[in-house]
Amino acid sequence: MSNPESKLVQIGELAKSLGITTRTIRYYEEIGLMGKNERLGGSTRTYNSDDILRLKFILKLKTMGISLKEMEQLSDIFDINSKNFNKITPKLIEIMDNHIAKVDEKMANLSSLRKDIVEYRIRMTEFLSHNGKEE
Image (cartoon, helix red, strand yellow):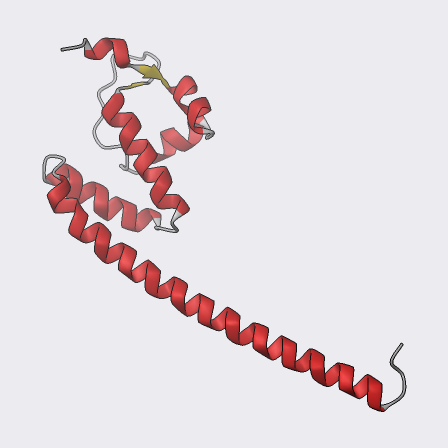
């Protein structure tokens, strides 16, 4: 087994590797998304491979439009159930299904808006051509 100490990454290095700020990581810790992390004295924050995977998961959820409140729910389920993915997965699927429905609704609204704009453009073009002002 490898030494877990050898896999620790400092906060600055982690932030840079993920293209985020150290403040973002600290914020996720403050609101509880990063779970319980032990800090040695007042030393620089360091993260193990589990912490890094959790942060990457948070960032992926963020790109999918999952809210911080929903992430907190997932984090609570994950931590309460001793990091058991069988407990978090059903809730994640439920959240994703809700987001799929919201995206579908937004797409339908955008499609309708596009149709309205195209129809209005046609009417304006016809108006110009009937009034002899078309260039």
